[in-house]
Image (tube, rainbow, N blue to C red; front, top):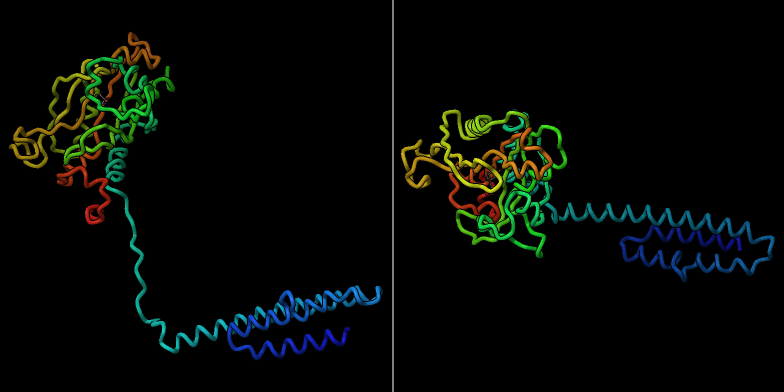
Length: 340
Ligand code: DAH
């Protein structure tokens, strides 16, 4: 048996050298190492030996098996390399061709704009607070002083998930979440994020868009703090020469409420198509946090006061980069996205 084994090993190794392609190699593997291969058969016949010879023979046969397997792998490498060389010299691959460049990506214009806004408010000591996009009737409306059936609900066409749950129509519900989490401490945060409205998509409105809510709650906070903060923001984002205009407005969660305009950055206030010949562009709604909202957040309105504001994100970017259609932001047309 031992002789037979040695002979088999020798024969296998020398015939391996003669395999010149992968088909021959596979056939060799089957002939010696396969299920019905010669070595496998021999290993199976161990049982026919006298008991005392079995362990020595088993060990020897296994050694041969390992040796053949290693030789098989080495030959596989040799053949593979030879094949590559053949392909190269046959001219199948032109190694002098330049590679295909991998195009580097970059941040979406919305992300860039958000980061600019974060940086400006960070300089003024605002922290960033993220709140959920899926909200409830209570946080999106009720606790913001907009009870059911209040006509102000008409300001926000809503994607309802069921009778209670909705996609937030604005970032304002975050105000309630921050206050409930932070009270009784002073607050100075921005709340960026995506909002959803059940609206017709047009060049001026999308059914989803970003806002960056702002909220400050403290002692002796007044409207002048609000106006100063938004003036600073407008000049940092739109340019140091910007003028601010404040108009009275209405929001259920602020009292008093204002609308903030800047002089038109395109015509410098002279009047043009973009500002509808008024010379002014609206940039945010804002106001002093309504006492009911302060209370809903856990702050005593006799002791605390605060302001809030809610600019969009795409609109400022549109003004700054002269983009006339909001649908371009999320249309995923690379010709547009690459420009920023
Ligand atoms: N949430 C308002 C909207 O989406 C915008 C807004 C107005 C936010 C006034 C405020 C605010 O914080 O004080 O229409």
